[in-house]
Image 1 (spheres, rainbow, N blue to C red):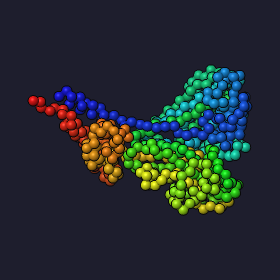
Image 2 (cartoon, helix red, strand yellow):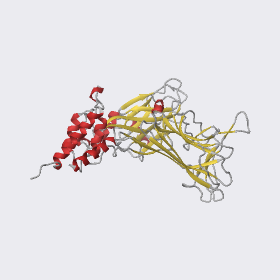
Image 3 (cartoon, rainbow, N blue to C red):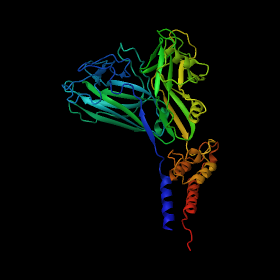
Image 4 (cartoon, rainbow, N blue to C red):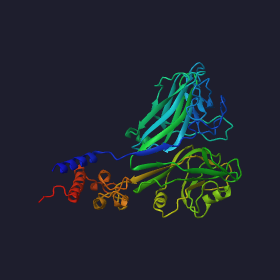
Length: 477
């Protein structure tokens, strides 16, 4: 009898447990300011093709390779750091206003997710800092990517989610690690699917240095955020690989086309309820701004970027590369994050019914002068799962529970079709917990969603199953 009570206690704990979360790093362009490479004590100003924009200081920032005269330990990561001055009050030249680096990311704000922004903040011996702020925001208009000959562009807009507002004491000649954490709140629901934005600010009159910027997302178990493994574009007959994906016709010959691909081998063996590709548009041409960009599925052959520019451009527009969606910035266009539904394609790639050669981007109507568009180099793919759906019918219901019962106790080789909803290879209490938490999901009518007591009945049914299998409570001779 003790064993029966013990099993029941464990089950109750598992019912109350939260499904395991997972996550990974969100790509940041030039996170260590190593582009461009610099010799000792050299610094730069032009950052229009180095991943970062500015906010509040008219672009008075850049990369710097400090020596031991400023930092005895030199740069925390690589050779360079980023330096930034604050801005100047337009009404009083004797007053400073906060200003510094800003970057809008291709990752959207997602429900149920925790974000951790970390960065090294420094105060040099020659230019001791007088205050800093590390900020995580939602929303914003990204800066265009240039050719490296000009100051960087401005990043505008955004809503502050969380910040470290000068909380750490920094000894001159050293760096410290600043950490900013934000967990999604329903109060911010109007910001969902807005792009994340990072700001690294100088508050006082003095310069501040930054290095080693990182953003990590911890998502709920029913979501996965995937960065591309490769992204490039073809322009002027050459293959380009930098901080943007260009398409259309600009001040170059012919139309640019872009390619991007994803490794889906780590996808959970679960029903994909939705897949969205997020494209960060950072610049538009001066003509035909209301025209349409086109997302296509590359269907001809695989590629790795070593092919010729002509071959890569041909893969995007080949007849086998089906158009998935046209999307337009609409009237009075500006940069921003666009979400394109790619659910059917991702499902087909995941189950092998179509080969995964990635996506292509091009103008829907090519050949128009000054109609170029520019997208961020790391379009993010958000996968949403329907966990608990064993038979793949789009509903978590009694049929899925029966499947789990039949396979309960499997220790190897199980998949979602056998009741393994957390991709552990096993069918156990963790999978039962997932099923009970999602019971009724995907159903057309809310009446099928069980009350807490109904969910508990499912659990107790599994307990009875385990008792029969293990012989708990069996009458002895």
